[in-house]
Image 1 (cartoon, one colour):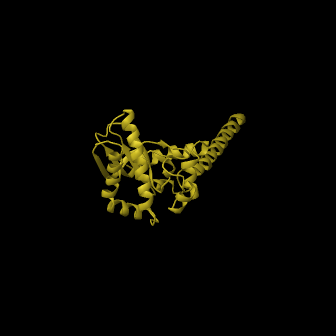
Image 2: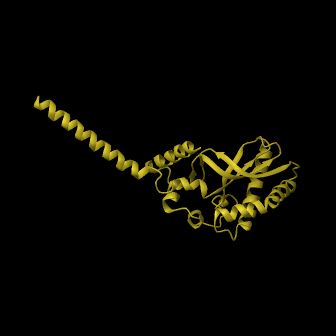
Image 3: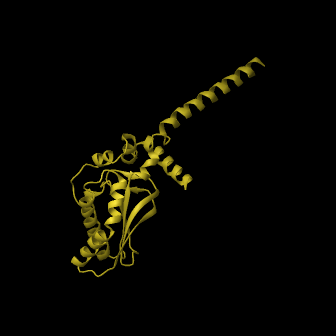
Length: 210
Protein backbone atom coordinates (compact mmCIF):
# COMPACT_ATOMS: atom_id res chain seq x y z
CA UNK A 1 0.00 0.00 0.00
CA UNK A 2 2.80 2.36 0.98
CA UNK A 3 4.60 1.49 -2.25
CA UNK A 4 1.49 2.44 -4.28
CA UNK A 5 1.22 5.80 -2.51
CA UNK A 6 4.89 6.54 -3.13
CA UNK A 7 4.48 5.61 -6.79
CA UNK A 8 1.54 7.98 -7.17
CA UNK A 9 3.44 10.80 -5.46
CA UNK A 10 6.39 10.19 -7.76
CA UNK A 11 4.14 10.24 -10.83
CA UNK A 12 2.51 13.49 -9.70
CA UNK A 13 5.89 15.06 -9.03
CA UNK A 14 7.16 14.01 -12.46
CA UNK A 15 4.00 15.35 -14.12
CA UNK A 16 4.49 18.67 -12.34
CA UNK A 17 8.14 18.84 -13.36
CA UNK A 18 7.28 18.06 -17.00
CA UNK A 19 4.55 20.70 -16.98
CA UNK A 20 6.92 23.31 -15.56
CA UNK A 21 9.60 22.39 -18.11
CA UNK A 22 7.05 22.67 -20.93
CA UNK A 23 5.95 26.10 -19.73
CA UNK A 24 9.56 27.29 -19.53
CA UNK A 25 10.20 26.06 -23.09
CA UNK A 26 7.01 27.64 -24.41
CA UNK A 27 7.87 30.97 -22.84
CA UNK A 28 11.04 30.84 -24.90
CA UNK A 29 9.31 30.14 -28.20
CA UNK A 30 5.86 31.70 -28.11
CA UNK A 31 5.42 35.04 -29.93
CA UNK A 32 5.62 37.13 -26.77
CA UNK A 33 8.34 39.50 -27.95
CA UNK A 34 6.24 41.35 -30.52
CA UNK A 35 6.85 38.93 -33.41
CA UNK A 36 3.23 39.37 -34.51
CA UNK A 37 4.16 42.95 -35.37
CA UNK A 38 6.26 41.59 -38.24
CA UNK A 39 3.07 41.75 -40.31
CA UNK A 40 2.66 45.43 -39.45
CA UNK A 41 6.24 46.50 -40.16
CA UNK A 42 6.50 45.66 -43.84
CA UNK A 43 5.03 46.61 -47.18
CA UNK A 44 5.16 43.65 -49.56
CA UNK A 45 5.66 43.56 -53.31
CA UNK A 46 3.84 41.09 -55.56
CA UNK A 47 4.60 41.04 -59.30
CA UNK A 48 2.36 38.79 -61.41
CA UNK A 49 3.71 37.79 -64.81
CA UNK A 50 1.49 37.62 -67.89
CA UNK A 51 2.22 33.91 -68.33
CA UNK A 52 4.78 31.21 -67.59
CA UNK A 53 6.53 31.63 -70.92
CA UNK A 54 10.27 32.26 -70.72
CA UNK A 55 9.78 35.72 -72.23
CA UNK A 56 7.04 36.77 -69.79
CA UNK A 57 8.99 35.47 -66.79
CA UNK A 58 12.04 37.47 -67.90
CA UNK A 59 9.85 40.56 -68.28
CA UNK A 60 8.52 40.04 -64.75
CA UNK A 61 12.06 40.19 -63.36
CA UNK A 62 12.88 43.29 -65.42
CA UNK A 63 9.81 45.03 -64.00
CA UNK A 64 10.69 43.84 -60.48
CA UNK A 65 14.17 45.35 -60.75
CA UNK A 66 12.88 48.65 -62.12
CA UNK A 67 10.20 48.97 -59.42
CA UNK A 68 12.62 48.10 -56.61
CA UNK A 69 15.09 50.73 -57.80
CA UNK A 70 12.34 53.34 -58.24
CA UNK A 71 10.97 52.56 -54.76
CA UNK A 72 14.43 53.05 -53.27
CA UNK A 73 14.41 56.54 -54.75
CA UNK A 74 10.84 57.27 -53.61
CA UNK A 75 11.41 55.93 -50.08
CA UNK A 76 14.69 57.78 -49.55
CA UNK A 77 13.20 59.98 -46.79
CA UNK A 78 10.79 57.42 -45.31
CA UNK A 79 11.44 56.53 -41.69
CA UNK A 80 8.43 54.27 -41.07
CA UNK A 81 6.16 51.94 -42.97
CA UNK A 82 3.41 54.56 -42.68
CA UNK A 83 5.66 57.02 -44.53
CA UNK A 84 6.28 54.42 -47.23
CA UNK A 85 2.56 53.67 -47.56
CA UNK A 86 1.75 57.37 -48.00
CA UNK A 87 4.51 57.79 -50.58
CA UNK A 88 3.30 54.68 -52.41
CA UNK A 89 -0.28 55.96 -52.54
CA UNK A 90 0.93 59.27 -53.93
CA UNK A 91 3.09 57.56 -56.54
CA UNK A 92 1.00 54.66 -57.79
CA UNK A 93 0.93 56.27 -61.23
CA UNK A 94 4.72 56.69 -61.13
CA UNK A 95 5.24 53.02 -60.25
CA UNK A 96 2.78 51.99 -62.95
CA UNK A 97 4.63 54.16 -65.48
CA UNK A 98 7.94 52.62 -64.37
CA UNK A 99 6.59 49.12 -65.02
CA UNK A 100 5.03 50.12 -68.35
CA UNK A 101 8.16 51.90 -69.59
CA UNK A 102 10.23 48.84 -68.68
CA UNK A 103 7.94 46.61 -70.72
CA UNK A 104 7.98 49.00 -73.69
CA UNK A 105 11.78 49.17 -73.58
CA UNK A 106 11.76 45.37 -73.91
CA UNK A 107 9.35 45.50 -76.85
CA UNK A 108 6.30 44.30 -74.90
CA UNK A 109 2.83 45.83 -75.18
CA UNK A 110 1.38 44.04 -72.13
CA UNK A 111 -0.96 46.11 -70.00
CA UNK A 112 0.04 47.06 -66.44
CA UNK A 113 -2.21 47.33 -63.41
CA UNK A 114 -1.01 48.53 -60.01
CA UNK A 115 -2.98 48.02 -56.78
CA UNK A 116 -2.33 48.61 -53.10
CA UNK A 117 -4.24 46.51 -50.59
CA UNK A 118 -4.30 43.63 -48.10
CA UNK A 119 -3.24 40.29 -49.48
CA UNK A 120 -2.69 36.82 -48.02
CA UNK A 121 0.90 35.66 -48.56
CA UNK A 122 2.23 32.13 -48.27
CA UNK A 123 5.45 31.45 -46.36
CA UNK A 124 8.26 32.82 -48.52
CA UNK A 125 11.97 32.00 -48.33
CA UNK A 126 14.42 34.54 -49.70
CA UNK A 127 18.21 34.57 -49.90
CA UNK A 128 18.88 35.02 -46.19
CA UNK A 129 15.50 35.47 -44.52
CA UNK A 130 12.01 34.04 -44.47
CA UNK A 131 8.63 35.64 -43.79
CA UNK A 132 5.70 33.74 -42.26
CA UNK A 133 2.45 33.25 -44.12
CA UNK A 134 -0.16 35.82 -43.26
CA UNK A 135 -2.02 38.98 -44.16
CA UNK A 136 0.22 41.77 -45.45
CA UNK A 137 -0.31 45.16 -47.03
CA UNK A 138 0.87 44.61 -50.58
CA UNK A 139 1.69 46.50 -53.77
CA UNK A 140 0.48 44.27 -56.60
CA UNK A 141 1.76 44.79 -60.13
CA UNK A 142 -0.21 42.74 -62.66
CA UNK A 143 1.39 42.37 -66.08
CA UNK A 144 -0.98 41.51 -68.92
CA UNK A 145 -3.25 38.65 -67.86
CA UNK A 146 -1.34 38.12 -64.61
CA UNK A 147 -1.55 34.34 -65.02
CA UNK A 148 2.14 33.47 -64.76
CA UNK A 149 4.30 32.56 -61.78
CA UNK A 150 4.49 35.35 -59.22
CA UNK A 151 7.39 37.11 -57.59
CA UNK A 152 6.88 38.01 -53.92
CA UNK A 153 9.12 40.06 -51.71
CA UNK A 154 9.42 43.06 -49.39
CA UNK A 155 9.14 46.54 -50.85
CA UNK A 156 9.65 48.34 -47.55
CA UNK A 157 12.00 48.08 -45.80
CA UNK A 158 13.97 47.41 -49.02
CA UNK A 159 15.12 43.96 -47.90
CA UNK A 160 14.86 42.57 -51.45
CA UNK A 161 16.77 45.39 -53.08
CA UNK A 162 19.72 43.01 -53.50
CA UNK A 163 17.72 41.49 -56.35
CA UNK A 164 18.37 44.70 -58.29
CA UNK A 165 21.20 46.36 -56.36
CA UNK A 166 23.61 45.57 -53.55
CA UNK A 167 23.51 48.79 -51.65
CA UNK A 168 22.30 48.40 -48.10
CA UNK A 169 22.47 45.78 -45.39
CA UNK A 170 19.23 43.91 -44.72
CA UNK A 171 19.81 43.97 -40.98
CA UNK A 172 20.36 47.74 -41.00
CA UNK A 173 17.20 48.27 -43.03
CA UNK A 174 15.14 46.02 -40.76
CA UNK A 175 16.33 47.52 -37.48
CA UNK A 176 15.98 51.06 -38.83
CA UNK A 177 12.26 50.68 -39.56
CA UNK A 178 11.36 49.21 -36.20
CA UNK A 179 12.09 45.48 -36.15
CA UNK A 180 13.47 44.43 -32.80
CA UNK A 181 16.53 42.20 -32.71
CA UNK A 182 14.25 39.28 -31.75
CA UNK A 183 11.92 39.92 -34.69
CA UNK A 184 14.87 40.11 -37.07
CA UNK A 185 16.18 36.79 -35.77
CA UNK A 186 12.77 35.18 -36.31
CA UNK A 187 12.86 36.03 -40.03
CA UNK A 188 16.55 35.25 -40.53
CA UNK A 189 17.21 32.25 -38.30
CA UNK A 190 14.24 30.06 -39.16
CA UNK A 191 16.55 27.11 -39.85
CA UNK A 192 17.39 26.97 -36.14
CA UNK A 193 15.01 24.59 -34.25
CA UNK A 194 13.95 27.27 -31.74
CA UNK A 195 13.06 29.71 -34.50
CA UNK A 196 11.34 27.11 -36.65
CA UNK A 197 8.91 26.57 -33.75
CA UNK A 198 8.49 30.31 -33.11
CA UNK A 199 7.95 30.81 -36.82
CA UNK A 200 5.24 28.15 -37.03
CA UNK A 201 3.54 29.44 -33.89
CA UNK A 202 3.53 32.93 -35.39
CA UNK A 203 1.72 31.59 -38.48
CA UNK A 204 -0.82 29.76 -36.30
CA UNK A 205 -1.27 32.91 -34.20
CA UNK A 206 -1.91 35.01 -37.31
CA UNK A 207 -4.38 32.46 -38.72
CA UNK A 208 -6.28 32.41 -35.42
CA UNK A 209 -6.53 36.21 -35.44
CA UNK A 210 -8.21 36.38 -38.88
